[in-house]
Image (cartoon, rainbow, N blue to C red; front, side):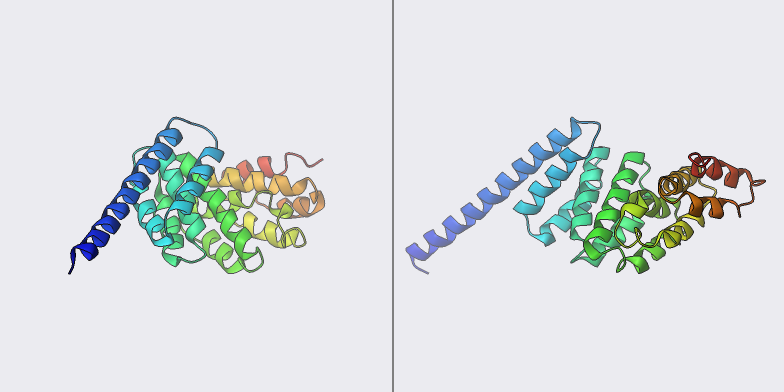
Amino acid sequence: MGNSQRNVDSRKFYEGLKGIINLIMNIDKILSKIVAIEHGFQHILDGADEILSACSKEQCFELALELFKHEAYQVRMLATTILGRLVTTNSDALCFLKERVSADENWRVQEMLAKVFDEVCKHRGYEASLPLIKEWINDGNPNVIRAVTEGLRSWTSRPFFKDNPPLAIRLISKHRAHESEYLRKSVGNALRDISKKHAELIRNEVRQWDLSNPRVLFTYKLAAKLLK
C-alpha cells in the first residue's frame, strides 16, 4: 500500500471518528435539554426527530434500547418515541414497546407509550390496525391495554372509529371491571368522550352494566358523567 492510499484511509478513519464524536456530543446536548424540562411532549418529539435524522434506523434502534436504561424518565420517554417511529420497519421495536416500556413504573412514560401507540395506528391506518388494537386490548398487562384505551382518545374522532362508534364502545367497555383503577379511569374517560356525540349509544351500553360491582360503578360514574 502506497503512502497516498494510507493517507486517504487515515483521513477517512478520522473523518468517521470525528462524525461519531460530533454525534455523541449532539445527543448529550439533546438529553441535557430534555432532562431540564419536566412537563410536556414537544421537546421530546423534537429530540427524537433530531436523532432520527442524524442516525441510521439500525443505530437509532440500538441507541433507543440504551436510552431506555437511563434513570431520567424524560430520556426513557425519548427512547419510547424513537422506538415508535421505527415500528413500521422494525417489529422488534413494537415488541420492546409492548413488553418492556409497558413495565416502566413512571406514569409519564406510560403516557408516551399511549401517544406512540396512536401514532403507530395512525400511520398504518386505524382499520388496518384492528388486529394490533385487539391484541393489545386483550393483553394481561393493564398498561398495554391502557396504551390503547388512552392513546386512541377521542376514539370517535379517529378515522374508521368515527364511522364505527359501536365497535369502539365494545372494545373499551370490556375492561369496565378491571382490577386496575388506573385503567378503569381511562376506560371511563374514553367512553365519556364518545358520549359527547353518541350519548344514546353510551346510555344503552352502561344500562347493561352491573352497578353493584364497585369497580363497574367507578367506571360508570366517569362514563355517564355527561349523560342526562
